[in-house]
Image 1 (tube, rainbow, N blue to C red):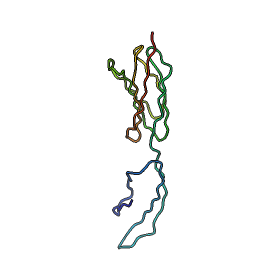
Image 2: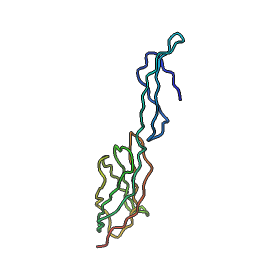
Image 3: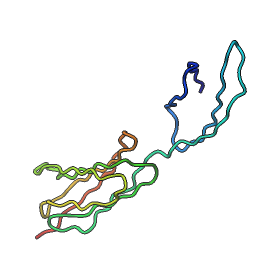
Image 4: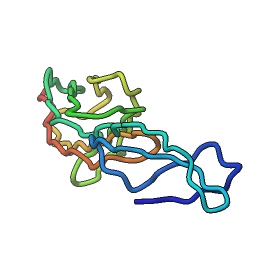
Amino acid sequence: MGRTLPGAARATVMTGLKGSTTYDIKLYASSAGQNTQPLFAVVTTEAVPQLGPIAVSESSPDNFTLSWGTVAGHFDGFVIRVGDPEQLFDTLEFTPSGEVRNITVTGLVDATDYDIELYGISHGRRTPSVLAHAVTGTM
C-alpha cells in the first residue's frame, strides 16, 4: 500500500490495517524526479479488542454480580445492559470504566430471568456484544 503526501505534510494516519500485525514502513521524499534515501520503521498495530465470557455470581433476590475478562486489546469503557426478556421492567444500563472487570447489579426483582449484554468501547468503537442469562433468587 503506497501513499503520496504533500511536501508540507508531517504526519498521516493509515487506516484499514489489521490488528496485531507488523508493518514495515519506508518513507522517502521526491524532488525534481529524484528520491532521497529512504527512512525505515517497523510498527505493530494494537490487538483487536476482544471480550471474554460473562460470569454471573452471588445471585440474591434483588442483585447479582457480573464478572468478565478481556482476551485482547485496550478498552476505554464498557456498556452493560440488563433487562428481563418480557420487558416488564426498565432495562438497566451501566457504563464502567475500562479498568473495571466486575459490577454488582442491584435493584432487581426476585425470581426474575434477566438477559445481559456486554460490549466494550475501544478508541471510540464498539466491540461485538457478549451475552449471558441470569435469574435472581427467591425471597
